[in-house]
Length: 389
Image (tube, rainbow, N blue to C red):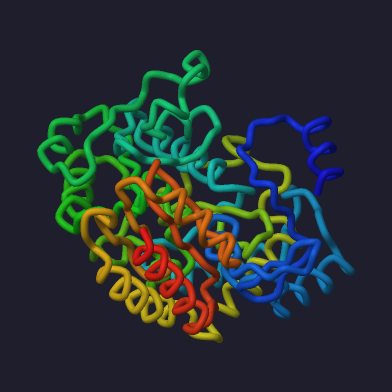
């Protein structure tokens, strides 16, 4: 570890607050360090490793595709890309039927913004306070948290207006005839696992319809079965005009996309947007293997069941220290008064990886195929910690 730390400090940008922890391999929901110690991974690359680590279906897809074709330009037709697009459309609601591939969540949101402003010919986007949509310039502007934007103002335009989460009156005031789109996370991830109210989400849909604006749903963290539905917006009986996906879509392999209607997709004609690596044969083959495994192993439904059991258990801790337990499926946040980092440290000593976001929210986003016994282990560790403080 000392050698690795020295290499890290000497040659890498120091823009991450890393823990002194490194892993050599993983299997299922477990990771292993150089000494062979086992860690139950409740972080999953921050909702990325949908199938855990070293899943046979992913390993096979990577090896098979890499042995044949890794990359060709989007100047040519790509079989694996078209097959993945078909599979994504097949699990999407009617009306979401055309896919554009990129490499990450930030790129997906940038593409969605470009699509919206070009489609409507308008110049304003409404975003929600405490949101997170990425760190590229336009995505950073709609990430309505000053701590991420500080020092980068000259790179961001003045096209965004922010509204309070679940404040319908604030939402109504923000909309006008210059509104190209509203972008919204069904459950705010980096913002502290904060779900939208159903009424707020439906109001956003109605206001977009009334004003000729597009509703963009950022499903980067909530999508691909994470919340117990294929997409987070399915909890609200609303279908957006555009969705953005990444993270769990590739199970750890970098890929993202946007999905829209056929009509909206026609806005981006040849030359108006593009990407070198987006939807490569390798990335597409891996993502297709992930999607098919989620389907074949019934992981969307099981995420809902396992998540509800976990949240019901943790809600028994509500009190002075545990202020709230919220989320959906395997996207769980436990808001604490002051001991969140102490709990994270305690869990690490017990061989469990937890993440703290938004200051004091313990975020749990394990692989979708995490076992019920592993979930119970985490719940028991949290309960024991609370009994001792």
